[in-house]
Length: 155
Image (cartoon, rainbow, N blue to C red; front, side, top):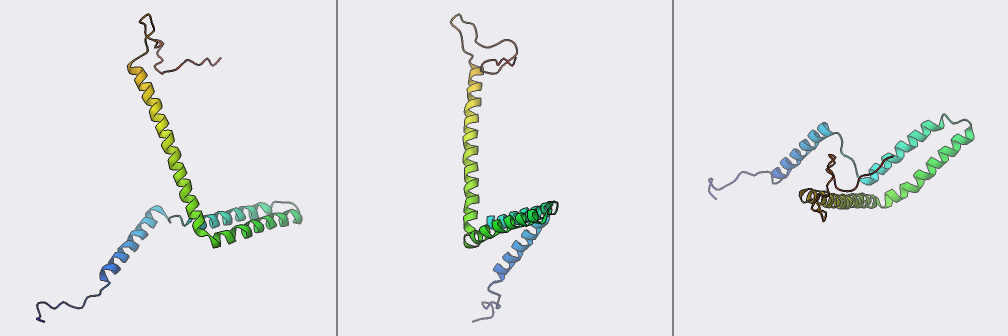
């Protein structure tokens, strides 16, 4: 080969390394700006259990009697020992449950927005064309109330 067509020996992974460095820099910038992102649902459940156990431990010091303190400590230990194996065996379950909760929230939000749209559209339609009574008078109140529906007596 001629000297003009030969290429210097470049690192084959240079592009991948540069992208990884850029990604790490962006993650560091976001952590600095927004704080640490939440972990998986299983990790968050572990954090919650730890926080509850800490609060219960603080609470148990104010309980009178050794029997009450040991009972509280036993309940906390039993709860942790029941949940930890489930988290260890199936951490993805909690991610799926969190995703399902998000989907349920989105479905609820969509239903509510659709209902609100129909409700406000019906109100706008009634404002544009008020119902007429047989004598030709408008059904609309003249006391300043522009809303559809009937007046509610609060007395």
